[in-house]
Amino acid sequence: MGTSCPAPDLPPRPLRWLFLDLNSYFASVEQQLDVALRGRPIIVAPVNTDTTVAIAASVEAKRFGIGTGTPVWEARQRCRDIVVVPAQHSRYVEFHDAVIAEVWKHVPVTRVCSIDEVACRLLDNENSEAQARALAARIKAGIRANVGECLTSSIGIAPNRLLAKLASDMMKPDGLVVLSADQLPGRLFDLKLTDIAGIGAKMERRLAREGINDIAELCARRPRDAGSAWGGVNGDRLWWLLHGVDLPEKPTQHRTVGHSHVLSPRNRGPEPARLTARRLALKAASRLRREGYYARLLVLHVRFENDKSAWRISRRLPSTQDSFAMLAALEHLWPQLVATGRARPGGFRVRMVGVTLAEIEPVAGEQDSLFALLDPHDPLARETRTLSLSRAMDRINERFGRNAVTLGPLTGGRIDSVGTKIAFGRIPEMAEFHE
Image 1: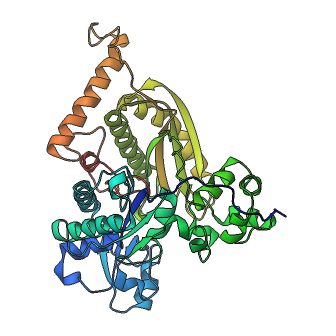
Image 2: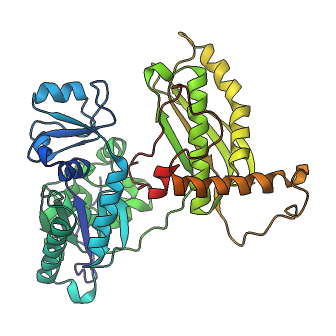
Image 3: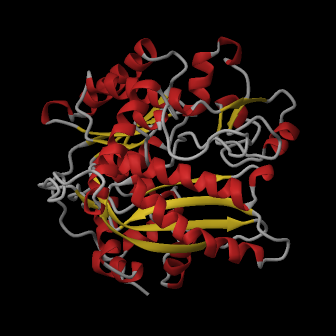
């Protein structure tokens, strides 16, 4: 058991962060685009079929207990008036960019946390509670007036980003909550441990074994005891954050670039899956070049029907950005996947396929190839030639649209569309919708 004790001396903790969370974002964009959907319960789904799940629900749909992950068939049972809207991911990025531009008019954007979340560090002349509340009101009004009247947001203001995020969740929709230093940490005690980012079911069980069942019990520990219960320095860090101390952000590193796709039931055999994997590899390679990285490893990963576990295999690459090198690695791996799939009960049936480029490193001080001046048909010049061709394809597709030029077949109805979709925690660039 930990020891309860008075909190140690804390530094000044002024209001430093404003965190904006757009309410029911995908659904709100759909309502903004279509007046007929406003005020109605809607869900956004990958496709309009009962076999898929909602990726977003409008405020009206949430009143029926419908949310992200609710199967479409269940949503129809809960609300007979529900409207299912196919997702328009490129429009969500357009509105996201417009929201970010509007926020910038009022306060510098410190971090874009996701497609519907943004964090802003407050300056010294705008961090009194009255000034911060007025700033939040101006941001909300600006989004409604200049981006869309259906786009409401919940804003949290607090001494650090973690607390500002928690505050934004306390009042939805269209809320504004301020957590000042004199309210901390007591204002948090009604929240669950799992409301804190980084505490899932596994960590919750670990803390319970250490006698910590809620936020109040965590905060009652000395910082080092909280860290011990957590199992490392992060527990100590969390204690200080919950008390309002604004700690420096931990640096993050980009480690992989990849894409995956769930195959439709008619396209789960070897050839459609292979063509889909090729398209995913080309998308990943194009993105790798655009973001300025090399890759040293290609990973092919799949999920078979009726199997929750993932199967994966990898092949090393020379440090490269070349689409042709990545397709060659994929073709080398594919027979092993086919053999594994055909040995399974029911034969080769792949539900999901993905390609990830790993061990990536930034392009820094890139030098021209020593072989660039050789005859183009010389084997030593091959990679220089194919990388130049890969980059030329990027430029053509960006100008003329997705699949203006590609490698391999795209006709015959044998392959699903692998168009860009919103990923949690990563916002696609508009260029990805042309790949």
